[in-house]
Image (cartoon, rainbow, N blue to C red; front, side, top):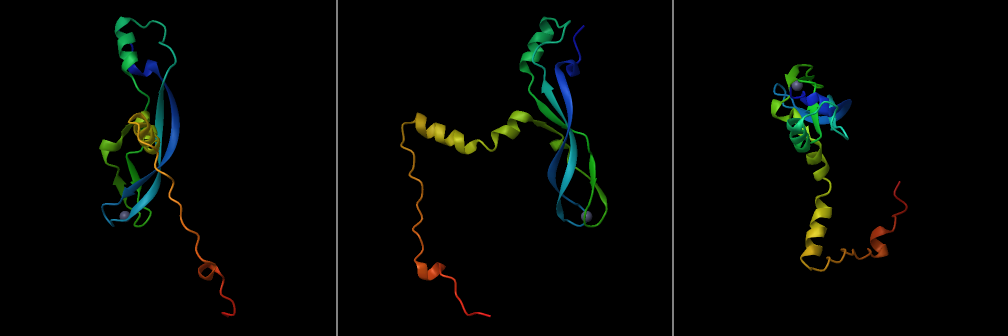
Length: 135
Ligand SMILES: [Zn+2]
């Protein structure tokens, strides 16, 4: 018998901030949403067969949203969080902030020299000097 997918993961609750728009008052607010982080186990659980092994190899860590709705901070009405955002792969999250690094790697690989850091000329002192005598 094939193992349940849960046997491959370690569950850990997690609270993450999320921005959501209330459909009633149209205000966007930041809400603390409860998730569970499913981290793939280091090794196959005992009793795993060939089929489980193949399945396990394809698995990725992901986050599963527990909260389906939030209460609007502005009008107090409960609204549903769009369900297409209820599952997020952890490597998708990790991929976002590294975009800059990736671009640098690409430019290195293509042999292009790294662009020189933009140097801002210092402002003449007459622009930065604090004006005195304004009371
Ligand atoms: Zn609202």
